[in-house]
Structure formats: structure tokens, C-alpha cells
Length: 315
Image (cartoon, rainbow, N blue to C red):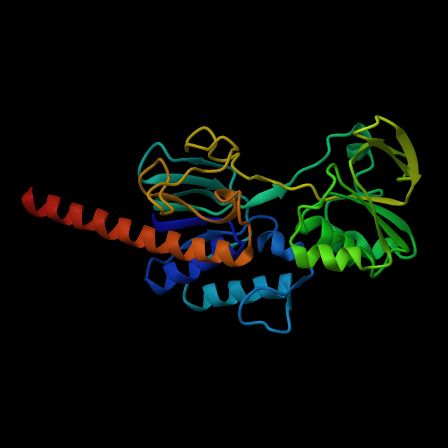
């Protein structure tokens, strides 16, 4: 029996673990097969407070983890296979078997979206990638395409210029959605060019990416662009597969929380970070959410224990 189980190990999960461990809740953290979340595939993080010179994403998450374990959190690098939140104590299954918990924090984050093209899946790992930081090194002196218009797309494009000969950004709209500073960096980089009002509709190549087929969404004209790689950066979807049939979700599939807290539709279950935040999706906001979730869980557990003690005395 655990007082608190935390599912997820990004900024939200590990911050929740830090606060919960300091509150003597002895949390068990299921870090998953990709411990540290999406920041482990992010290059330099420039906007996290306390690091004026910037810090690599994996290094930042390692510091989070060390701080959580320092205060007594137990971290296991296992994926959670299923949960049962309909009963309390809640039940959480992983490779180690089943764990019971009085409270649970869902901090499973969000995952990259794909274009859904047949060639995209077939050539995944053969020139198609959703992680510029992971795979950019393999495209030295090559030509690549980045699909997207937000901060993630601009970050990927800028990172790829360290290796690639040229980077073409394809965006469905006339203007970029990225923050002004990211737009300025990308637009001023001589290695980056843009194709607006267009979409990649196919990936061409047998054993590796050889070209992409691009359609102008205003004129319907198509063109073939010879490239060696396709990087998809079109957003994310919340990782709610574990709880989609048990917790209430919003219209976009994110876990719904209530009363300006991290409380979900089930008492004793809390949600923090990108799994419930479609708007900000920043490391610092996720960390703040993790803090709030741990404090909400602590307050819930205090109330639960108090009720049980009062009930025992009355009986």
C-alpha cells in the first residue's frame, strides 16, 4: 500500500515527487520507458528559471530526478500498463505487478502528432523523424524539411541548421504561430527557407526518404521537393490512454480538472502538466502544476486519514 503513486516523470511528475517526498508521503514514481519526458529529447532549455546560460534538457531532468530521490521518492523506470481508479485504494499495474495507492497523480504528458501519411510510417527511422535533437546528427550536409509553424517547429529547424545543408519549413498557414523571438531567429537564419499555405501530402522513397510531395492549399498545385529527411513538428496529443475511460476529459482529450486545482473527476486522483494543459505546455508551468498536485494530494490524504481516525474512535 502506498500513500501516493505518481505516473510520469517529466517536470510535473518529478516536481510532484519532490514536494510529496518532503511532505513525508513517500511517493512511488513510475518514470516510464522514457524517463524525464519530452525534455529528454530537447536540446538547450533557455527559459527555465535559474539557468541564465541555458541547460540541456536531459541534464535538467536528471537534476529533477536527483532532487526527488534525495528527499525519499522512489523512482522505477517502468511503464504503467493499466490502472483501476474506480476503487479506493486505487490499483496500478506495471511489470512489477500491482501496487495499491490511496492517491494518484497523473503526469503522463503529451506526445508528438504525426501527419498520418502512408510513407511517413513506412520510412520512420529512415529519414522520417519526430525528434530533431535525437536524429539531427545523421543529416550532416543534407537537405531536410520541417513541418509545422509553432515554437517546436522553429526550435527543430534551428537545431537542424547545426548539421543540415538546408532546412525548409512547410506551414499550412500564411503566418507562423511561433513566439516572436523564435520567428525572428528562424527567419534570420540563412539556412532556413519557408513554404507557406502548403502541406506535405506524401513522403517518397523506397529504403529512405528521397523527396516529399507538397500541395499548395490555396491553388491545389503540387510540387516534389528532393530532400533527405522529414521532421514532423505539428503539435502534441495528451497521453490519456490509461485513464480515458475512467477520468473525465475535455473536448480536446485532456484530463479535466476542477476548482482551479489539479483535482480530477475522481476524488483522490490529480492531474498535472501537459496531460491536462493544452494551452501553455511549458516546463516551468508543468513544474508548477506538479507542485500544486502534490499539495492537493497531501491535503486530500490528511482529510482522508482524519476521517478514518474519527470513524475508528466513534466505532
